[in-house]
Each structure stands twice: as C-alpha cells, then as structure tokens.
Image (tube, rainbow, N blue to C red; front, side, top):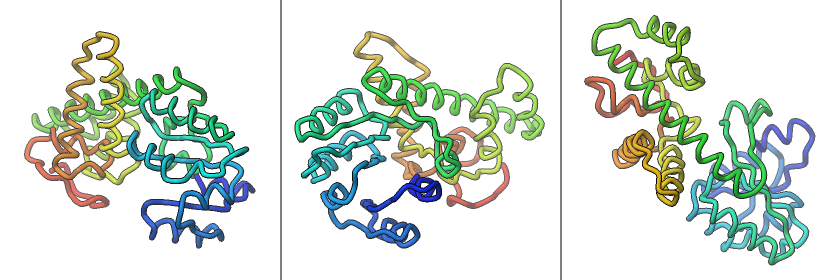
Length: 261
C-alpha cells in the first residue's frame, strides 16, 4: 500500500512496523524516516493508515501512543477486527479530537500493488460484512482443498479437474487464485492461515450471539486453527490443502515448487 501511494504522488512520510528490519528497508525505498515510536508516526502525518493483525494488537497500538497529540488526524483502520473493537477505536479517536474510518480489506498484496484493493468503509455493518466475506471465502477454500485431494487420491489429473471445476457450478474466485497453488504445494502468503482462523472466529462469535449454528464455518475454523497449532499459520490460506491431501503431512517451505505430494 505504501509503495502504491508513493507511486501515484502521495507523500509517505512515516513508517512503523513491529518488525523494525522490514520497516527500515521500506523507509529506505520510499525515502522517508523510520519511526521508533508510534507517536512519531502521528506527529509527522495528517492521515494514518493501520493494518493490524487482530483485536489485541489493535488495542496495543492505540494504547501505545498512536493517538498521542492526534487532534485533527484521520485514522484509517484496514484491519479485520470484532465490531466492538472497531467501535472502541472510534471512541478513543473522538475523545482526542481525531477521526477514525473503518476500511476493512477484502483483497491482498497483488491488489495493493496494483491500486485495486477492495475496501469496505464505514461503521459497524461493514465490520460484519468483512468477517462474513472471509468466512465464506475460507469455507470455499477448504471445500476446494477437499475436492482436489479426493481427485488426487483416486488418480485424476488435477489440472484437468480444475478445468472441469472452472466450467461447472464448482467454479469460484478461490479456484482461480488457489487451485493451482494447492496442486503444486506453492503456499507463498497473500492471506495467511492465521488470518483465516481469526476471521472465521469473528464470524462464529457473531453467529453464537445470534443463536445460529454454522457447521461448515466451524469445521473450517478448526482446520485453520490446526494449521496455526502445527506452525503453518504463516502459510497462505491455500495451505489448508496440506491437512487434506493424502500423504502430505507437513507443508514444504514457503516458495518451494514441488509436485502433488
């Protein structure tokens, strides 16, 4: 996102990341100064864009100085959080004279570089929508992994099977983005399994509050949680195939290009 904003003429004046090495590399590329503290980001900026992993991290950032002397600043929060935390952030910003916008992302790295990110902006309803988008996407991803795994187990050509899926009711955006990666065990991360687990968990929490039973979402959440527990949380969501394909076990290192397993 920062690279794209710089390319189209916006002044990117401050970068902060928990990974200081990554932040320093990006600031050299963008010709701006790295910030050792969150308050320094706020001091230098008029508009602050945050992409945070989960509720706990968002609270740590807000309580860690991001809103210090933030009067007049605009905070654009691109994280997928529980609606109550989005509301908490908004309230915190208002109390110091700042504004906060929810801008939950439904796209990934490729779209960020192209400038075609899909953002759902607004208030509580948009937070619900984002969680539901990812819940359905995660279910689709798990179902695709099962279909390809079964095809592989019975000896079908997976390239041909993916083409059959693409011409029938089994077609989906996930098939286009993840199908070949599942076949080739290529799980370079665009949307991590850890984030998939988080977002499915948010949706399930909302379902429980409304008295709904969502068995598919629950099964998908358990699979992505299992990936995290096995140390596979930083693989792309397509890595769920490693739990499903016969004989796979632990996934290859990210970036490896191996066969069907």
